[in-house]
Length: 435
Image (cartoon, rainbow, N blue to C red):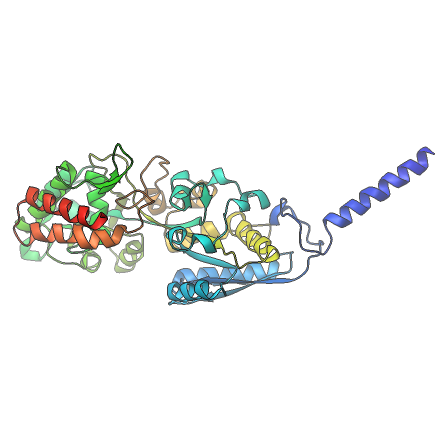
């Protein structure tokens, strides 16, 4: 009788194993690519993946998608469509009810298409990915009402660059950039050499995507909630914004900052001492042979601010359950890799593209830490404000920037309008816009 019971138990266990690891493709993925046996069988599945990364970053995506298609044990094929008109194409696809299974898009998708994207918190139940491995402030940008619509992949912000050779020529320490905006202006005056067409400062003129980074660090959000939980403008009496207008206008007036928009080209030509730009500038400076330093932009009186754009992966509501699981498996492989992957996709994205990461296992990797540029650009302060100039619920930030902030700056630096009058006018305009 004991032998009979043992045989029945063994048979039951074997049946359970076959049922769980059979070919129906509905394994919950808790073991992940790194823990799954290559002998397991799954129904083949093809998923569609759209994005707009047409540059060198797209080449990285293509290489990794090809590798995943060849090596994953699940029978998954990712068909990727990289298109320069991605944003237009995806809008039409959602409207027509024929969206792809997976997309790589901006965090603003949570505001534009919340009804077409699933809650990406599901990926943490279906795979070995852990939510705590992401810097929380970036997850917040991609979330709304506790729903995560975009799984962060790329961070795009602004950083401070300085020309070490110009610093040395001006008697400044070439290994250290200014730690405050007072120092920025003071050092810029020492660097400027008008006879050689060299300028100490390079804050782009009429470039709202750059100036908002400085405004926010000096004066905080330009729209915020008041005590009654109502969104109100914060221009009038804002000492930080007043400081920016005097600071920037003063350098333009003294000739330490040229009235030009394209500071990247001037920086690559060795004509700018200190500027701000995105991570993309570093590769251009490398190619130009510029000896430069890079760091986070200094914080002003507004405290820890890190406004940035976040791009990431989403699964659409058009995906079937089978396609959704396949997309989750690709994401797990992208972030964690497997035995066949020397460098996970998320780590190579930073190493090859030069963009800082928001995924802690990548940040903590020795290859990442050994890159001075990446280490300098990485802001892992989970308390830093990462939204642009307004709470994340406000979705018209750059429209209001173009309507109000750009005009405010131009009225002061070009039109000679009094700074406080310009701030009062910006307050009135913003109030009308909000109404």
